[in-house]
Image (cartoon, rainbow, N blue to C red; front, side, top):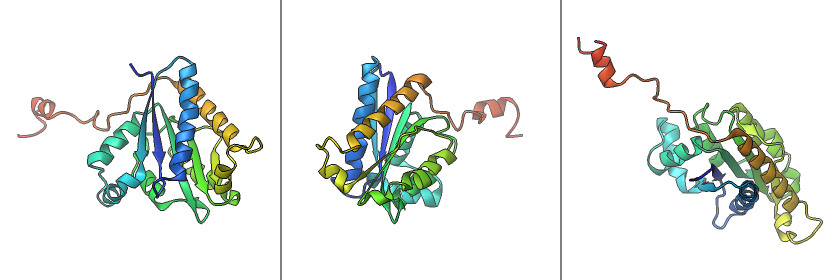
Length: 209
């Protein structure tokens, strides 16, 4: 039996992607902490690039379908979320924002979320706090204090002891794991739970008279 579920949202546009690489590193750090606490973890990856057309369709119709709908169900039931986007012109990618736009506004309330971003220069790192973090604050998610930005040079110097990226990844993973441990298991709310069944409507004489 799985003790916790972790959904990893990665909005990289290329394959391979530095955005996915950062997401994988953050996932590894989080899973290690949870397993060290004696828990088993199920990880599901939501690669936004693979659902790009479906995201556009859902934006137009208001209803996600197919594999995108399945991926969103997993996201809504997750005990923790890692969300990583590339930065363009100092903000999140359009594809990443399009996915956020179709999310149920209440589905991530209180959910521990770790945010990360990639970009070409460290000068864009502040975009995480003035651009990406407010998105999840609006959704009332429990965003962990440490966010992680990785510039191109960070990957080139990954083996250098003065490179702060590995330490920051570890700290962020620890913070997310602590929040997930404290919260316990989640169950996604059924958006149709309050809708009366056809049978009950007939029994109450609500239709067909």
